Length: 418
Image (tube, rainbow, N blue to C red; front, side, top):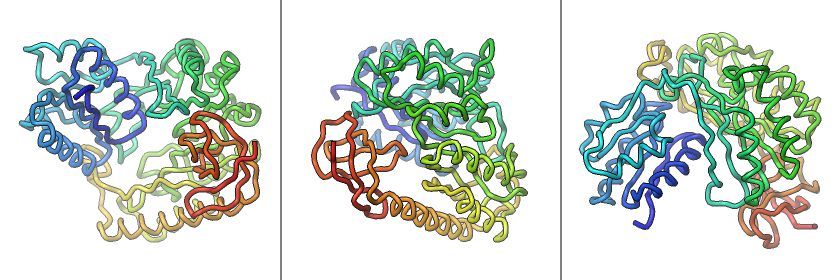
């Protein structure tokens, strides 16, 4: 192998960290290594991680196989017992250059997983994109201080910790200088940004600083946010900063107050609706996506109907639907479970509604003039993160004006006009 092979499961932050590990492993000379960056969000995710490790060993019999990520952090013994794994390293260790320098020499400790709860800082790492010259990602935060009853991730990521604003701004500036037109701020709970930093700092203040100090940046985008933590500065930025993209992905999870309470979420149904109404009033062209769980323990058909109605009342366009899967070690796994067939059926109904909401939005875009950041010669995304197929080829990483002519139910079709 000319460079390390990276297999990434799970979230965007994992994908970001995989690129960092690729750099560290290459610098350490680990070009024959296979790194599996695991996910622990559900029991199924852990099973898929194990499958990926076994498959990697079959396909690369002589490679050095390094297992890391949230599943490895939470259950290191499980992966240490796998004969296919040469090394198991934790989430704090995987982002350190010296970890991979150590793995490049004989006699390195096989399991390197320390107490993630003791980690108090998150360093800034420069990652130059994900195979496209259009968009780059900047990690601004890691970890989570909340304890939702369905979620194991705080035990894989540790406490919430923020990258100092000056480092974030400097990294964004370097990416823009390298030619990136769009930067996405990412983390585990990015609306908790700044709580651990000295002085008044928040995600909204960070957004303002980036846009003020890097005027050459064309587009700034946020990854998933917990809307209950959105501060006044973020709302002001949404209203006043055209370079902050009009697309928010919300951590809603459910639309019934009792289920939200049993999830240990910190918002109510009314809070979610009010937030969407407020933001839409501030930024009429905003588009919302949301994470929603179908079949949470104790959920009745009436509870589920409230979630379906929430999609309409909030005007959600992009749904990420998760059929509930009990995760060992979480309170929700010990609650009375909904039958698997009912969970799957509700998830299918929720996805069907999501498809209808997307088509409704796409229908409304016919004839609109949109600015497109090209990700492939004839495809890109609008400011609202909507995929669009273009009629003519355009260099990747450029922003062009296009007229929307139609759609195929999932993405727009348009003609470049300028």
